[in-house]
Length: 386
Ligand SMILES: [Zn+2]
Image 1 (spheres, helix red, strand yellow):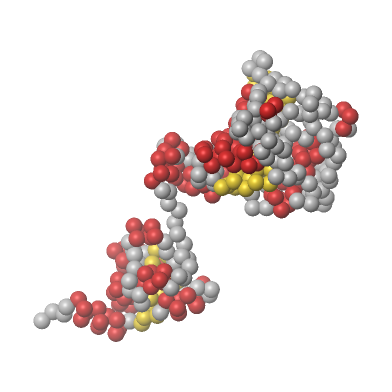
Image 2 (tube, rainbow, N blue to C red):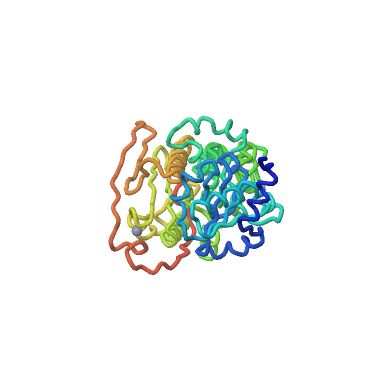
């Protein structure tokens, strides 16, 4: 007479070795000592898996195990509850694997104990809908959207360039946006700084921008830095961000940010506008020039236009700020050709783009090989009306 499944299972369990989830937890730190094999089927992984586990679904066990493990290695198998892994352990022992055990209780008991798991990225239904037009682009897709949602972009300035950049980066689903701006919203800003509103006049620009971003895309976390960027805080502020979009309106910040980005190896998408003209370029440390390769020192304060004098057509920062956002998105996604070593210029009056080649200066005071970078706080004055 044949055995029932329960009888079969108990004879299998007698023939193999079982380990507890606590045993496996202790072993996790010593990865070289064993291999952890997840024998669950593909769709079961969506809830997560034990960190470092290799996936060999039981349905493919005999076919695929040789790709993942050798016969003299110590193997620990797990499934959802401990039954399939026990059967799989028996199968592997029969195939000549010398040291196989099954984790009793499986992934279910592992998570009941609150032990660590790796959860795969998965978009909510709402996110799939929100980013549908991104998902439809092969160069973006779910993988690209995941990169965007995990990206951290620091915006220097929530003004003319920062407003369009912040809005579109938020709309694109860049998960974390840092905003550095110490100013408050003024009526004269609204001609171009479209992230702010009349009602929010008088509020800090970082707070006003956060309101607009939250209303547009609740996926985005905004980190406010309502302070001036100076040598004492620049490293703390930049820490944790993947790249910087420089929409700052003054030389001291521009130089300090450049020097800090070179020091930390972070890309810096630089933009500036003046009257009808704008320009944008992307500084990627070691790959192309930095700002000081082009302008080693700021001009003397009395030669630069003051904040009040520098006018700008309201749409100009919109155009340049969005080109900066485009650069930032490409850098996050790792696609296309960023404006490294290229200065894109735009003339709003003739509606013409131009491009200039930029070269690294081997004698650059900050990005030349072997330079010690010391931060400088230049005297504060405005350069252009960003
Ligand atoms: Zn340089």
